[in-house]
Length: 291
Ligand SMILES: [Zn+2]
Image (cartoon, rainbow, N blue to C red; front, side):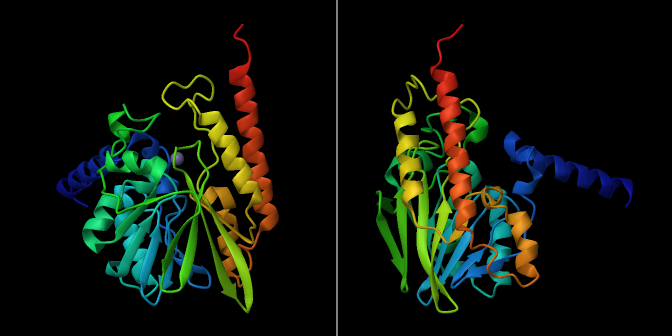
C-alpha cells in the first residue's frame, strides 16, 4: 500500500472510531461480525459477537429484536440477507431496552424498511428523544443517538403477533424504566420450547440504587424484574448480549451439530440468580451508612 492509501485508511479508521461512543471503542466484540444462524423454529441470530439481534421469520414478514448501534445496521442487514431473507421485509422492530447499544440503529432501520417500532412505555420517551431523557446517561452527549418515532406503546404482558408468531413483552425494569424481556414458543422436532430473551438484569457502573432522584423506584423495579424473571418458564436461554448466555462457547458446539446447545434452563436459572446476588450486594453496599 502506498503512503496516500495508507494515510486514507488511517483517516477512515479514525473517523469510524470517533463515530463510536467511547464504551463501544473499548468493546471490539460489540462490532465484531458473527455468523447468522437458526436457533430454533423460525427464530434466528443476526447480531454481532456480543450485541445480540434476533430475527423471527413469519409468512407475513419479519420481526427484528434489537437494532443495536448505528454501525451495526449494515452487519445486521448482511446477516438477514445471508439467511435468504429480505431486509425490507422487516415489519416490526422491537428492543431489549433503551440504551444505545441496543437501539441506536432503530431510526436507520425504520427509514430503510418502514418497520413499525413497538417499545415498552417506560422506554418510549428515551428512544423518542434519542437518549436525552435517560435517567443515567441523558446528559452525556456521547450517549445520544438518532431519535426514532414509536408506533405502538407496549405494557407489561403486551402481545406482539405477526404471521402466527406470538411474542410476549415482560416488563423487567431497573436497568432502564422499560427494560423488556421477550418470550415466545418455538417448536423443534415436535417439541414446544419456551424461549426467553433477557432484557438486562444488570446494575451498570455508577447506577444509584438508593436515593436516586432521577429514578426514585429503581431498586423496587429491579426487585420486581427479578421476580418476573424467576417465574418465566425457560427452555431456550437468550439475551440482549451474547455474553449473558455464553454465545461464543455455545455457537461452536451448535456448528458441530449440537443443535440443542441453546436449550439451557439450568444456565438461565444460574444467570438470573447470579445477577440478583450482584444486585443485592450492590444495594447493600449503597445502603450501608457512610464511614
Ligand atoms: Zn443497557
